Length: 122
Image (cartoon, rainbow, N blue to C red):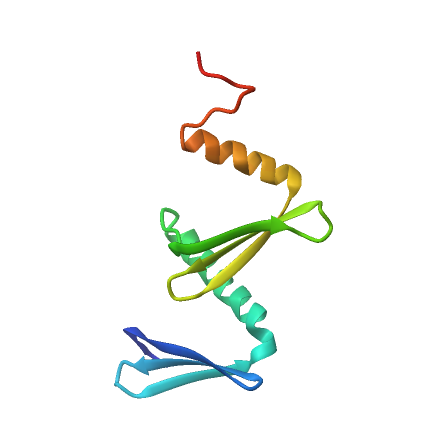
């Protein structure tokens, strides 16, 4: 199967099946079908491919500009959920422990030039 560069067409969820549609290098349609309940597995496989790509190209990062984001508590109140959605409506959520969330806040504040009240610049 050879997919044309830029040949991604769309993703469909039909009943309990997911379909990813591409255009092949010979202009023929290519469809990959999978059980909808295995979307997380598919994301895991794509993450493995990304990791292998980055091992060969360490300066490259797969970046999705976020059009929307949300932060909320996990029901256990020990973890925070960070959710991001791209323009293509791809949404990914991450769970981090509340201690890591504090470090995340500190790192982000430092990057943006903010200083918390405990560490004032002189």
